[in-house]
Length: 407
Image (cartoon, rainbow, N blue to C red; front, side, top):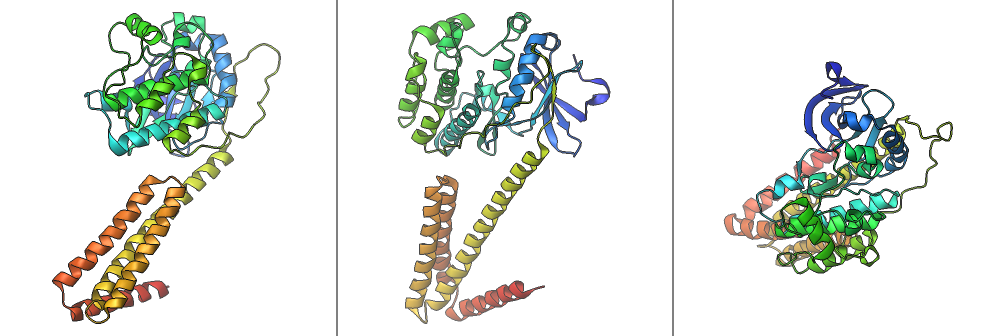
């Protein structure tokens, strides 16, 4: 198919080719407002399958309800022209497959964030009534240490005999559940299996069902237990349950969130589908609810701003508390101890809220701030005289008062 004429596709300006898969080419693009998006242009053999396109058009109405911090949500789709395409949020980062290509597994905080983020993503996808069906390291983007799931629902929507015969591979052996390989019914349990296989690879650096020809790997998935020997002890029982051969024996995505300490997303709101005329499947063009997108973006921006203000407040009060305690040490030791204790109590209180919200990064930041304040106090009392510290404290307080009343 190649790049569309004049590097434009509908209202989108295509900037560069990001890659290609079994169903289409992905391009980095700009929307009419100048924001970066990812545009997946379907391959000709996919675009020629009217039944597959009709099913995708119907599924887009459900897929657009998927909204979450760990999914690249669908923003737009046009499936009735010569070059059908789907537009998603662009996540700048590297795929999990690329990160693991060197053979080094994830450990510590990186593995924990991956496990929790993927569990939350699956809970959001399944809560909207969507099955990903192609969850694997290549469909997980890591950006600033956080995972983002892409291409959810597309493989499921385009699962038709003609698309498969044209060369599109529906899934990757080693990450496909046994029931998928055997041609059985596919539900959310298949995604849980793929979640387990993806996490097993990330945690150990080894494919849980080995490598080799696709048929050999598929045989091991159906008949052999997974290799979890190198998976950390805290994660191995969870993955062993996810990789059970019988779908009903696997945990649900919300249950995974609870076991991994991740937030359990609320179910997606029920929306009415837009109907198309006639009883026969038809393709259609869908446009997003811009107001909902704007509300979501505004809420995310406000949350980021609140977190930025909170962190600045913790650092600034820590500096003032450490300086004041050091200045008071030579004159009123009791006051010095009281200032440090008061700041420590504030840190512990804020960390408690972080613990309740399961915000591990917030807890770590609070504890580091508390330790930094104590370290600053010890350093200042060692290097400077009491008079110098009192003078510095007075200067800081005058500056703060001037800033507070400025304007």
